[in-house]
Image 1 (tube, helix red, strand yellow):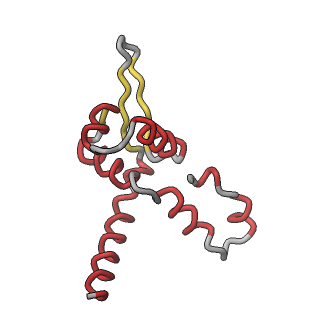
Image 2: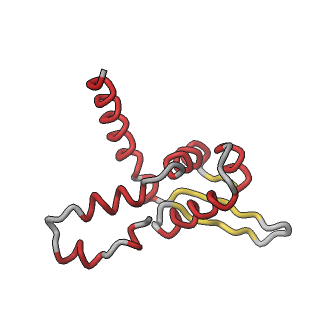
Length: 118
């Protein structure tokens, strides 16, 4: 689920709600989004076939769906080159690149959580 599918009216009418956190979790949640993000971040621009190879067990349908959601959420852009056969590449937007600090914070929190659970 992406932010665009969450009622923005709730956020605007109730700024003290948890809407912003819920939106962030909806955008970033799922099995594949972090993996897709990390793959594209590591190479800056990736083709669909490169992503599929990099991610391994993901189906074409799931990868397509996840990429479309990330594009809709403005985390990446889809670049179509007018060639035969078609060449499509994916690149992080500035908004997508800004997730780096979020993922670092989550990584630190996760490490602390794991350490405390021992």
